[in-house]
Length: 602
Image 1 (cartoon, rainbow, N blue to C red):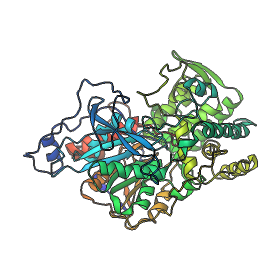
Image 2 (image 1 turned 90 degrees about the vertical axis):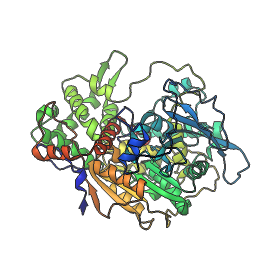
Image 3 (image 1 turned 60 degrees about the vertical axis):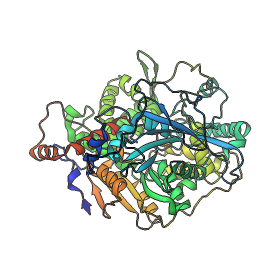
Image 4 (image 1 turned 120 degrees about the horizontal axis):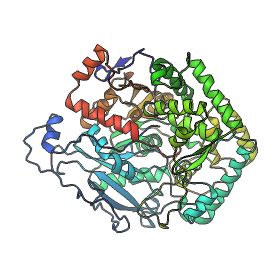
């Protein structure tokens, strides 16, 4: 096994074992590269470049009208969102009928400061944040500057809303108005999540609701839903790449984005320039609509909360108990308590109950981003133990008590669970409609993980899905790519276990799996300078880590109090970092704290 010393962890009074890493992605500001000379010097390029800096948006441009942006068959970029550029690209709705109906893909980019005729300009890196159904536009508008700080100034960082998603059209929605959606109870990014054993009829109710949503999809969007799938989106990515004037794709995909990236590599192995898939799902298992091996490391991620809390002590972890096992027992007692007697909560802006469902969903969501979620979760659990549920109630999205009057949703491109359902159900094998088949499936996955009560809902959503004839690519997921793929997995990822990255890598010769030694979902869930420098080196000059490389991380899920004096080794490590290293580390810390994943990966 190899480790990279330049990114060594390490803070840890008690030096507890890091068990491995939803976090995710993005917003906030950090020192970013402004002038191309500084950028070029930072990356070892000549500082006396004669190439001019590319102008990017008007600093006063705060709002942007997507409906006023004319779609085109080439990329016509317009200033948007202060420092970004936006475009709408026309693509075939069905690539089997390239002259037939059209779809329009919404894109946003954080442009490189280098002119496109600079010899150091390297073109676009396409970003997919996951889902399925996540908005690449939101990702890049919120965090493009941070991603640019990691990959380098040579690249445009480009996000797109996949077909059916957000600002791209046609947009998928099973409901004719937002009020109808609210009344049905499918609201917000977690609206379709449920606990399948919260009550005696929870599983049956989820099955019945899925049948109704399948019927709504059939009645209202049967003409388009068959073209909302990963195969077509992979072809859209090639169209976007060609519209940039490039022949081969550069890509960084997270979570479900690993399925999209692997699909692209299998369809177009000769069109890969650089391709990173981060938080890798078992692609074959996904296309079988099984969702059965995502939870292999979830209990390890949960165990890291108990061990890290115990190592941190009662000052830094308010939910502390004398042993990790005692902490686990105390959490189980809270589950039992709120199941039998939910706690009412009234905050200044909302109200609701802390019941078994909300507590389980909150704990599960925290497993995605331990380095920012574990500390507030510990405080919330300590408060809950004495009857105060306010902080725990606020950790998940607040419930909406007002309707949005914008009937079109044109400017917001609000994400809905419908698109994720459409993509995953269209991609996968048909799910048996009989309730008895669902019961059998639920019993099977429940025997493998305590979190099946949440996760099994993803397959449940495909019960009753319309059978739409398509000729989409569904494997095999193999290919001798024109450049090796870099796969990244954490040692304790709650929903995309490291084993899946190793399985997927077998289909692509010369690909390399980089391991990040942390709990959480995807590399951005933990601050690892080591991982980020490998990512930068891969994009900039094609350097791959050696096989079996393991990257450590900085920081702890339970940070020390202000004024804490680091030990001599930690202090020396901090001083050894270059200015460029600090910029990268600051960027990934910000990404780790603010990135949010869409369904089904939260």
